[in-house]
Length: 129
Image (cartoon, rainbow, N blue to C red; front, side):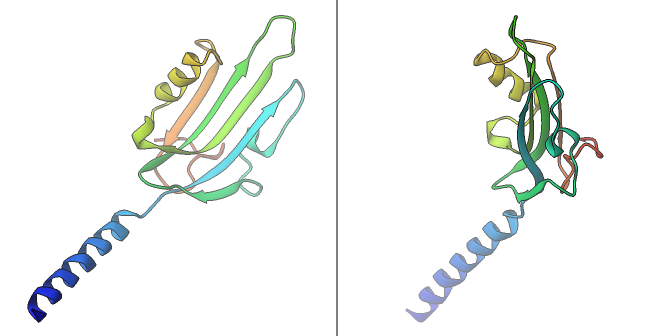
């Protein structure tokens, strides 16, 4: 009986260690800004000294994307987002913008995006992979 318990306990410990080892996560800068004409923010410029740093949950890449909402007769609104992009939801820029297009939030050609896979790679001073 002791051997069985020891084997089961060892198996559980190995599984937990494997999960923890695979659980290493990437760190990304995170911010969201919605800016009107002439407005600015640390998020827009990717100011590393002012941006929040977060640990992504699960397999992820860092992303930085910018798109504009243009409604005739109103000022253009700039949307800037930096943060984690979970791989299970689609980590490419095209995936991100296809989702925004499905919600009629942007039109083709009104966006820029980068994704990258190293710690804190989504500031404006560094470019994606």
